[in-house]
Amino acid sequence: MTAVVTAIFAYIMINRFIKFLSVRGLAVEDIHKPHKPLIPRPGGPAIIIPILLVEFMLYYFTLDIRILALSFTLIIAGLIGLVDDIFRLKGITKTILLIFTSLPIILLSAYTPYLQLPFFEDPARLFIIYPILIIIAIPITANTINTIDVFNGAVSGFLIIITIPIILALSFKGDTAMILAALPLLVSTGIFYLYHKYPSKIFLGDSGTLALGSMYGALAISGGVEIVAVVALFPAILNSFFFLSSVRRIVDHREIKVRPTKMLEDYKIAAVEDHRAPVTLVRLILSDGPLSENQITFSIFKLAIVSSLLAVITSLLIR
Image 1 (cartoon, rainbow, N blue to C red):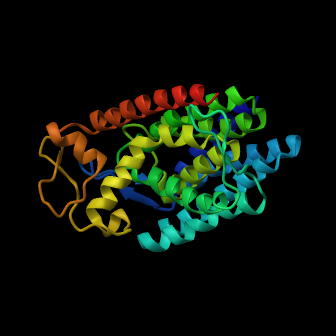
Image 2 (image 1 turned 180 degrees about the horizontal axis):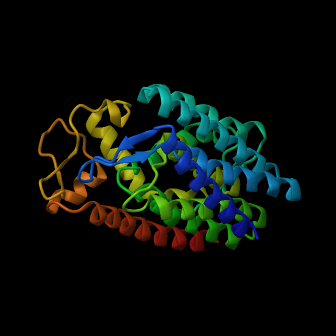
């Protein structure tokens, strides 16, 4: 029932938002297409609102404080992302603001300060350091998911794939409330993917990527499946690591002067050889030669599938 209600809400909201954004001229160029068509953006609220409606319904029936914490995390991250979509915040400013997304989890005590590791029977006790880790972790997952939003359908498809191991890990634990709380994220993203895949009819914008990334991190923490989430997220973590190690400072992608990829005359995408361009996962994927937008996106999906399978194995080892 949770999945069905979420799907209906998401379908209605996304279609209405496409019309709403188009009528008001809120659109950006799809730079990887011939003639650079204008695509409605930001579509973040179209996916945030259905998730919130279902989460609040779940809280009403379960009174599980963790669901309430997830909802507030989603709201805060969505608002920060919306401000970024409108006013274009600097990378460091956005990262600092995202610290506030961790506060609902901490203030509502929607976590357990234990970390269960594979091959260890007893969990690690992190009573003092765990809240600090939460403050760091949620902004990282938000920004990490944001970096995958590079091509049509990439971030929404990626998020669908890596959310499945989280739900499986929660089912192994028998945590029904968190399974139900995770379904709106999976289903809404799945419906959005139908409009976001190649060729996109709507873009998420930072309001969507930051909100969904924050919720993914909050869900992992509240559900006690942090290690599983990290393993599933590994390709995106590598992407962020490559980017930061090459740029050596926290910046938004819009602040980069030399793009890591370029469009060829046949509309295939190639890696830029300029040493000033940041190193990214996409640039590494293109190291063997130019690819189409769809080919790059499916390469990212393949990496997500591999990391998600490893995450499932990890959850079994923890179990």
